[in-house]
Image 1 (spheres, rainbow, N blue to C red):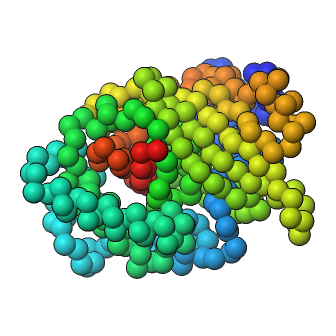
Image 2 (image 1 turned 120 degrees about the vertical axis):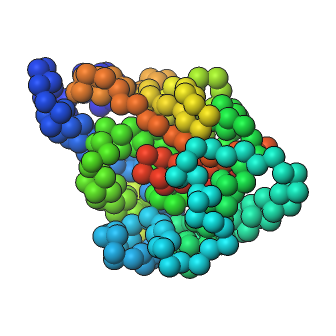
Image 3 (image 1 turned 30 degrees about the vertical axis):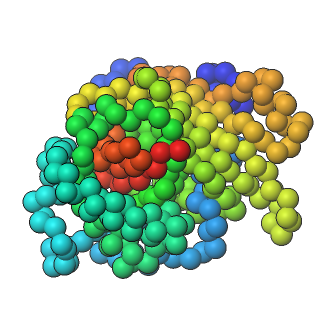
Length: 322
């Protein structure tokens, strides 16, 4: 089903592009259709070990129960840093004080400890979420590196996330960008539906490899075939995207193709490797929308071993160098 760009999604392209409303309608439909494609064919990107445990988020943000989204401090919440230091309100900061190295090491140690006991943040309690959010904000304010978006080359493993793990993939980042900033609530609902629909899956390592102008995302999966049976299909979902830093903290991505490799079923593994089957995500968007959405990622912290990147909704992804 993924072998040619002539995949029929039951959508019609608006050749006239006469209004923003029409364009956004196609973008949202494209995103939802691609969610269904990946859910039904790869059962992919489900957070690991989901057993129906709710994170218990505040109802004030209208977050669906069980959605893996962090809450954030309100104005009355205590903090040991000045609110003006939060980088979300300004550009990247560079901390040149050598005496802050010890502080950074302590913050990173505590952050990685919380990651290990909460399965990368998935099962963090509300109190732990607040602590994690605080630690991330403090690290971003103590960033030791100039032009962090331009220093992202290398292999990076996802250590912590304030949202669903699968949203670190260029595939889902592109779907979110296609829906537009004004449709955040719709996007959150769509991602939550996908999350719930794939709870039988288990996610393993999530890795990004950035070399030159290419970002490669790899997500290791285990998918249960039949409920109650011990056999699980394993594989890796690989998505490639262009990677272009455009400012000190900002890089732009455009998704390419997605494929599945490394299946634990010998015949299927050989079949996939021989045929080189890929889902041409970029061509699908070009066919539906006329262009591939551009994704903006902002990196406010990077050092020799850790990178903190935020998406368009300010969700953060903490990576450690592989």
